[in-house]
Length: 249
Image (cartoon, rainbow, N blue to C red; front, side, top):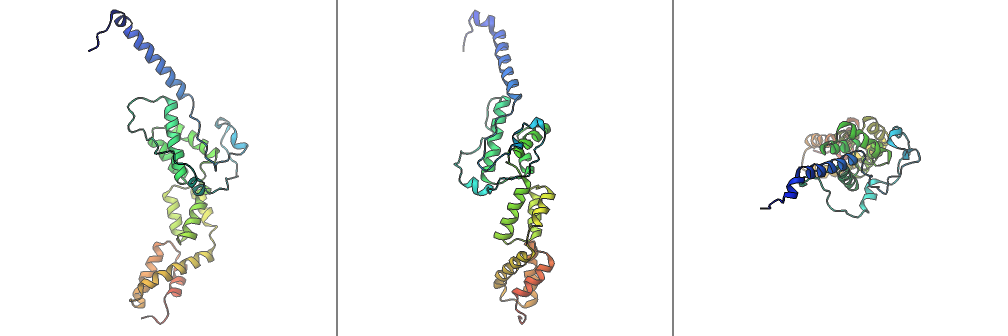
């Protein structure tokens, strides 16, 4: 056990107070500023977007042309993000901000996120309402977050590559908290003829697995399958008729 010298005993409380005061000053200074955002290669803020958050919300309409998923695939892995669960000491404000920023950027590198998804991360890590909105505004201003761009990506991936119908895509965008107006605008860009073609192709592939059933049963099962894929009822009727031969059963 350490024995305190008379000199240490004499200045102990004052020394402790001095050290605590210095740490408090450092924390206050950190709280007064946000950590710099780690720049992502596809985020290209415009000249308007470079102004400070204090001067108002960025309303520019230009969006980075590079797909987030493609750009993120080429980035080096910075290792697992620190979620702060094993930290054994108090953070200063600047340290906390830097940690949260690293976490958000790491997730953005793996996949596109909606404003709602990033807001949930910020709340989970202890930011209050005012701080959350400030961070969201900053990420939007820098081009990191864009619900309209995300909705376009989801529509393209789900409709063209995965063969999902507009109903399923709308539900996915809703689950991810994408702004409803952005979701609807992206869905309106789906070519109705393309959706019908996709439905027929999906129905034909599925119909091959229903070869041993009579027409009524096959029709019922194929209809239910296409409904789960999110296709409109009129498109389902056309796809089922095209996929099941008229003389079946």
